[in-house]
Image (cartoon, rainbow, N blue to C red; front, side):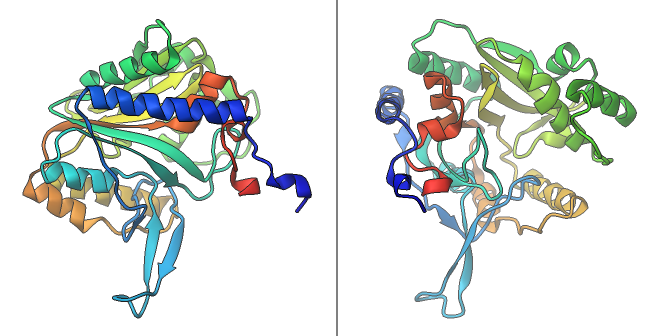
Amino acid sequence: MKAKDWRPAAPLEHLRQRADVLGRIRQFFHERGVLEVETPLLSRHASTEPHLDSLTTRYTGPGFAGGVTLHLQTSPEYAMKRLLAAGSGPIYQICKAFRDGEAGPRHNPEFTLLEWYRPGCDHHALMNEVALLVATLLSSGAECRRMTYAEAFGVYAGCDPHRAPLSELYQCLREAAGGGLQGIDTDDRDTLLDLLMSHAVEPRLDAGPVFIHDFPASQAALARVRPGDPPLAERFELYIDGVEVANGYHEVTDPEEQAACFRRDRERRRRLQRPDVLPDERLLAAMEAGMPPCAGVALGIDRLLMVMTRAKGIDEVLAFPVGIA
């Protein structure tokens, strides 16, 4: 370790801007009667999402003489939904979240997340509020454009993400990557769509804020699926100048549907040869008790600050990223 490693990675003006943003977020929700909550960072259950890996630790204190494995949260979603089922009303939280195996220009394994839930809202109504918060923080009059997932793929990747055969998706990916992706061999459709999103669509979303919504049903995660041809997941992602900053859902509230989501996630993890993750039975019990219809969204504070400061990497907005933590 070199002596210079003690210094923060981010300039002090960026850290001051972070403090200002956090204060303005709290003011935004205070004015709208949204309750700030705090839930544990450690949980006995991890997310079943196929492409997420949790950081884990071991607790051996009173009550668990044999020890118990605990997971650092990838988001506070499960705990906040239990609060919703208990009658909390609209809630938000600013917290740390953790994801193993994620480090790079836009990723740090420990990051700051804003997550909030609005009972009685669908994903379109929540997009309106996200747009208002972003406009407030950016002090910008720029309107948030909206495109469906299919429209974005048609315009920027030249294919229909819902109906194109795998061979066509491979061809579009080869054209988008310009030979930069060699040895891709998968029959997992969503893996190909994710690669197309990152190599063909995201690089072209560089003109202000834009919502992408109505994802394939196979990418629903914890969002409702709207029947139709094709069925669509009622979720959205917000990009600002090509950087993904938020991911929101019209939430699943039915416990049987949620249990089916867990089963699909576990099966996909098995096919992708990822470690199995047991479903959160307490979340299912909360839904059995009655979770209100709602929409929820997670917004990455660090990535938003990258956009606001025009930072080239996430290290420029973090005091001590993982390399010097």
